[in-house]
Amino acid sequence: QVQLVESGGGLVQPGASLRLSCAASGGTFGDNDMGWFRQAPGKERDFVAAISWSGRRIMIEDSVKGRFTISRDNAKNTVYLQMNSLKPEDTAVYYCARRGRRIATASDPAEYDYWGQGTQVTVSS
Image (tube, rainbow, N blue to C red; front, side):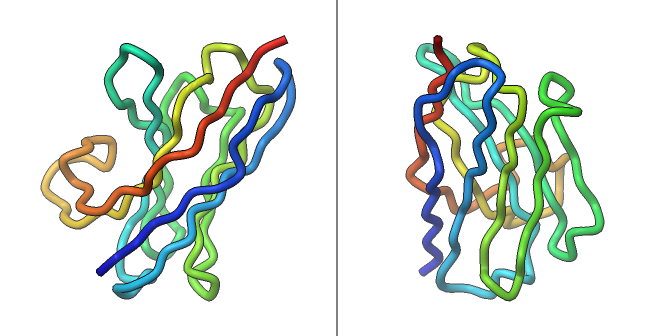
């Protein structure tokens, strides 16, 4: 059984940085693309970033492009989301997910078969 555990969230001021980590267990981590999504209160779960199994292909949502980066370390079974220049509108629960199929685009939540429990990121002064 695949398990994904996020960490690194917290309360920060605008302009600060955070690095989220997602540790995977079960399955073969290096076989799958991975993604990050976020969900703000009262809103749908939105795509943030995705990375291919090799790390060579990356997709970043436009509103965070230039501020967020995604990376992975297959030797550590971990995917990261580096978030810089955080804004109040980045406040959300952040989820990592394993992409289980390649039918639609990497930004489609339906592509992902396993999800972590989420980590809260709050950006406030």
